[in-house]
Length: 137
Image (cartoon, rainbow, N blue to C red; front, side, top):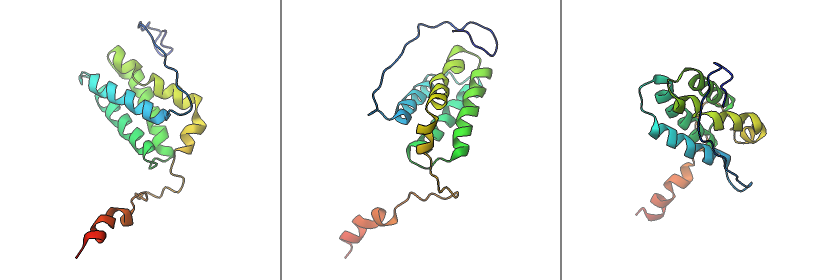
C-alpha cells in the first residue's frame, strides 16, 4: 500500500471484512481501537495517546454523547497518527476509521447528540434511583 503522504511503501498481508446493515459500525471501530490500543508498544506519543483518545471519542459516539467537534477530533487524531507514528501499526491503525468516516458521513452524523450543550443530558435520574425508591422503608 502506498502512503500518499510520504511516498513510502507500507507492506502488509491485507484483509477485508464484510458486514451487513445489522452491525453497528461504531461498535466495530471500537473493537478495532481496543485492539490497536492494546497492541501499541507505547514508545511514540501519537500512537500511545492517539489510540486512547480515539477509543474515548468512539465511546462518546456510541453512547450518543458526541458532537461535531468529536468527529473532527477523530479525523484529526487519525491523520496525526498516520503522519507521525514511528511504525506501521501507528501509521495504519486509523485507516478503517478515516475510511469509514469518509464513506459513511451520514451514518456518523446520525450518531451525534444534536442538542449538545456541554452537559451529560443522557443521565436518567429516575432510572438510576428506581431500585432505591422501590425498596426504601
